[in-house]
Amino acid sequence: MSGPSSQPIRRAQAGTTEAPWVRYTLITVALLFVLLFLVMPLAAVFTEALRKGFGAYLDAMKEPDAWSAIQLTLIAAAIAVPLNLVFGVSAAWAIAKYEFRGKSFLTTLVDLPFSVSPVVAGLMYVLLFGAQGWFGPWLQAHDVKIIFAVPGIVLATVFVTFPFIARELIPLMQAQGSDEEQAAIVLGATGWQTFWYVTLPNIKWGLIYGVILCNARAMGEFGAVSVVSGHIRGQTNTLPLHVEILYNEYQSVAAFAVASLLAILALVTRAIKSVAEWRHEAEMKAAAVLPPERPAPLAAAAL
Image (cartoon, rainbow, N blue to C red; front, top):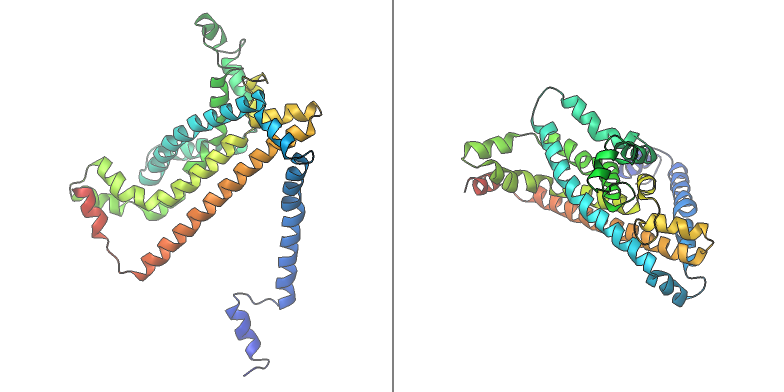
């Protein structure tokens, strides 16, 4: 039966009550926006990077300063992400599982880097650890260098990235509650066993998402790192800073070649996140089909 009465049924099955032209208009606008503001600029980066051929592209990557920037970027991310992993899990656990004075203040502090400009964050570290800063004279007396050195870059990276993991885990832990942890403790599990066998399996996908986002931001951070690095070629330049220097020196092919590496890292990060989301969705569907087996993780935690 196809008539006027069947139209509401088809719209309900499509999940919307708008007319088809409204849906197609919204889809077209979204696709045009993605094409103009995401796909075309990304394509332009790779086109400019390969403008003089693949040999020039490889030469830009083989440059010693480029390799130094790549290494420093990886080092900063390799230090910042594990530190934020520990902090994020600890902060999320405390905020979601316990009630204590200052809880709202701690939540505000977790969100602070989202509201503070990265440039301001870099200036704060200069104020603290610079030559004329609060701890500057003591650091100079003990021959400890933070600003215009690798430690300053790591500190700035940690500051701008530490909310990502905590912010992924806090709502997830709050939604799950603490009933399973309490049941595991009643069964005789220790705190570590409870975390490993009960809490971690429940938050693993949120944890993976947070680590992926944290790592992507750590590798692409510019503002805070630019302030504390000193722009010393071959020593304190990360990949984003190296791109800026090359572009300011009118080495456009080399600049876009290095920028394409950052774009590739972003695409790989996006691909990993998509795979993680797909795996999570598959597990959720499997869990919805299978009968519940709640006592299993609790019994494992108690062993």
